[in-house]
Image (cartoon, rainbow, N blue to C red; front, side):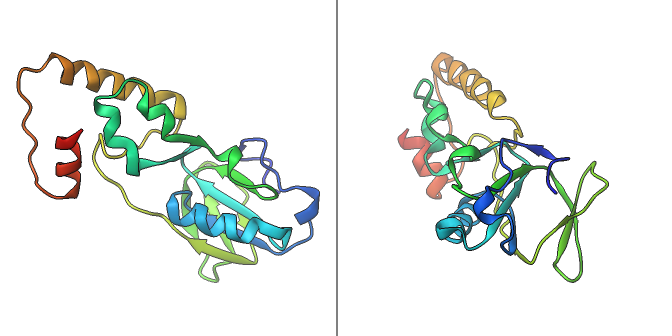
Length: 170
């Protein structure tokens, strides 16, 4: 069972109780897309495991450097992602060689599955992404950044790639 982990009201529903378990490691764009597809029709018991308790819509996040409360639009609770499946908040320490279980940091029991999809995603420096595990700690980071931006006489953006251009445009 998944009850020993930090869950968000997320035990699989009775419709998927006896269905094959698909464990999705990573709740970013790839993980959520796969999870939503497999969750439709209740053919699988889908379990997302992620370090965070929220999905981060980072594609729109740079705007939060200058628009008040914009980051709140980019934080989506995982409780809104799946109809039948569940979400476990935790950090994966190890994946079994056979791909049939994972070890979560701080937990004695492994989480077992029939199928596993690994979608660990990417990481970027703040303000493009945040590594905060709790959604409530994200807005303060952007609020502090907006204070710095608003008080600055000049701002230099280093890098002319897609992120640098987007940040400059904001």
